[in-house]
Image (cartoon, rainbow, N blue to C red; front, top):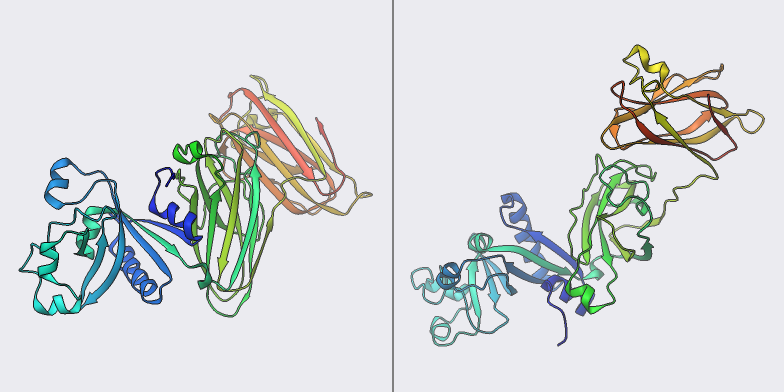
Length: 420
């Protein structure tokens, strides 16, 4: 078969369409591996999961001593819990070379008659013929194997939805360590769940060329934020913070309580260099809906400014703060009584920056600021900003830090923005 080498997880997804899950068990917490074994056992009993395990790098001495092959996948044929002894049956797809340690055919001490009967294990046949099949305890498996790959039957989930999209290479910064504004984002709503909801979200990058598959250099992931479905700008405080991996698939598993819940899904890459196409598949035990979150306003202005030696007064803690560049935002009451307004400051990542907004008319609005001073970007969104006149003062945290910046102001209604 002319299939570039990859993980068994990816291969089984290509062959069956079942949902891929990757669990790194090397040095994983006991509660995670205990729960994993129970999930594998339940899935195996119902026939709803295909399972493989994979070794990582092993020395030649370890390979000779254990009979295992380094960086190699083994099929999981069976799992059984025998009076608290958790066993797993594996098969080397080469149909030879098998485990030589405890519970191997050479280990007559561990293979009691009771255990042989419980696992339907024929000691004499196993000694005579090496077909690559062997039993091993779950604890020993976790010591020698790095990853467990699971492929789940999508019919386990009553509600399913697919969407497909592109992410242009020129859309947003190369890295999204500070700014998620330009990342593709989606509002996900669980609709009045009658029971606690299990939801799996699978991000898959489209691969159409064999060379791309064999030399996958795109690291992708998916972040999940508990929100009201709003666009996320900062990478902080994710409910599920995805790990960027160079696999075509990334799975996020989400558990929600009864009732309605809303989340924001954020697609992320490491060092975005080329346009990618991708799919997001959502699998859920309760009804839901998903849609794109737009990131533009009908009225939007982007101004270029600069902190110079005379105009770099630092944050409001300093008496020189008023010497910073100041911009006048006008919302005419003849146009609207209030508006949704977006203010963003982009500046050198070396500086901690933010901005202050001061009302200059009699509207019911208190002086406010963009929060903690941040590297690279600060954002504020006002859902209902009253009509009136405001001063926007961008600043660095420390006085005397010079450099250029961009100030963007967007609104759902007509506004004016000028330099004071």
